[in-house]
Length: 225
Image (tube, rainbow, N blue to C red; front, side):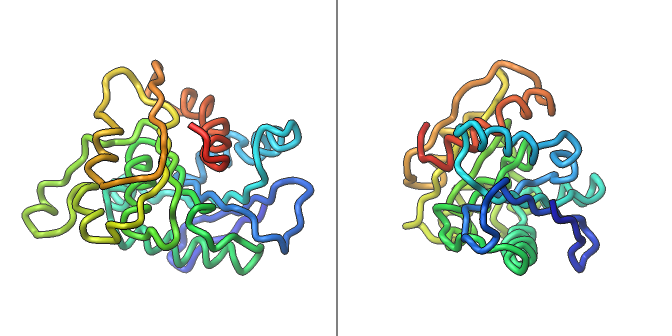
């Protein structure tokens, strides 16, 4: 696994699936809160699934969160942060390994506010991000301050402000019993390719997300619900 820092100081990492050619432009998944997932061994888990044939080859790039206030700001439908993911994170990774340039083979993975951002990225940068894996996404969020200032404050608004004819393919890989409705949020964003929002009865925590992330990513990349 390659580790580095972006010019703004945040940590990034890139994992190659075992046994693959670095020059082959594989699908790529950008993992939000990347320091958390590196710490619980996500790359090794993905290698294990690949070896068993349960996951197609995919390069994963993790981007670290900043302090709490910064994370809360960046993961609340912030188009400038999506630009960081598109330009800085994927740009850094592409300098080191071949990546697919197809949006239908490029995913953003996140949980809670990160899950909201995963779907939001497909709305404001559909030319690069066509897949979203949202676990326990914070679909309750609209930001009334941004609405008063005339900025995009929800997924439906983001769809209208971006490219209305480019629907994402999304998947919610673990949501608790008391939640906002991800399908409703997706409908608000406009027409879309087939996705899934399976209900998951569990906690809003890393243990539950970890249990479902790899399988959900495999389904998303294969285009299956």
